[in-house]
Length: 583
Image 1 (cartoon, rainbow, N blue to C red):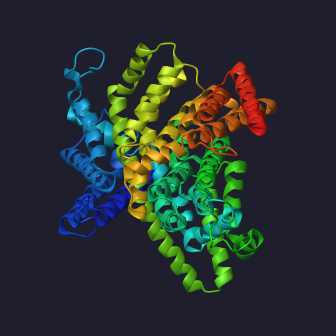
Image 2 (image 1 turned 120 degrees about the vertical axis):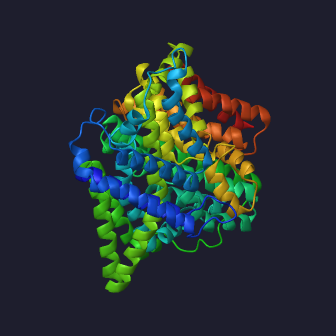
Image 3 (image 1 turned 90 degrees about the vertical axis):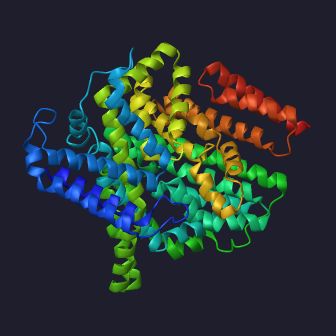
């Protein structure tokens, strides 16, 4: 009962923040209006009903014991309030999508054929959606309440204590003096910041405010500058330990230990950034773009000046990997970061004010994720009570009963489609319930199948036409968001390729013997670099069309999970490099 009470209080809090900070009206995007306060009042009246009757609800048998009129009214009001908060914070598209799922639960019994279901009364639907753990107050909301907020709080405390500036300075010291320094600083700083924030949009707004103007000043086209930041920020949702909050949900849905997910995803996340970094380097060489003029400090000097920012991160990683205790790791990291700030400033009031400000900022950041998880719970509840997920999996099997590539392509397409304008956690919840079971039934390991969904849920942030990360970058770069999205997809093409690679090559997820892992890493690394070089048109020199075609063919062969294809790709790449050197 205590857990349920906590979830209702958390739901009331995120709805309140959503109603008081966002209106969903472009003409008046923020402000505390009378309707907003009315929605807040309605929220706490509904939540208050469940808090007052928490003990009675805990003792009743869901779907068996009758519900009172007050229960039905409070449950209906809460669903409507979640839908309105979704419209305001995430967008009308997701609210309409959820309404379609709810309509299917109500009217789906009138459909003929495989997609029809048994008649369901409104009382049954409300009971399942609100009074069980299979709907609104389900695993997704629990992850947002008990895990996501703590990590977001750690990121906010680290940022407020100077961690964001430290990551930027460290990135500038590492790569700022190279060709195309500002773009490389954007890639590295977004990776470092994204490992904690886990949100492509938040990463774009935070690091892009510095890196995009810096790239434009050096001579980068505005659209390209926005694309670099968008692709780099999107990868933050693929890097441990946060991974756009999807790793927490994935652990809860699959019962795979969180530490195992984080360790398995690390190698592919690094491969993603290697490919993006190389693509940026190739463009810098082609356009003869210089270094970042602000990169004056050395790496050692930056580390000496701000090494303490790495201490809470090290503690977090240690607890996650050694003890598989992510929430305790994040909590301890918050305490360590605050303690270090206190020791360095020796100003208790300043430290307390910084932590309080970070907590408020974390609540604002976590509210959209909490609302997304709540509305995802409504969808999951609709899917389970109607068995639509099972019907969808059967439909995939009917299209391709033995063709895993076809099922994977359909899963990727469905995930990208669901991801239009939605945050990564909500996309993952929907796609993992709808599409991932079909892949598992075809023999794909549970970890690989769900990580496949995580990748495409993340990549939807830069996929046209609704690319939320590209739209966020467009406001800073002053460029067409669709143009930014197209360029970002080219820079981050490896993000669309890697999921297919690790499904067929589990060694990329650190599954298998060391030799298999090394060989898979070498082949995939050479393949993604060759693909990036072919797309950008540079590898040690400007490439003509035939060279780009050969490189693309070699890269495709190297990433293919077939031994003879790897050998053929390696030979083709080696022969081309020898020919290039002689030429």
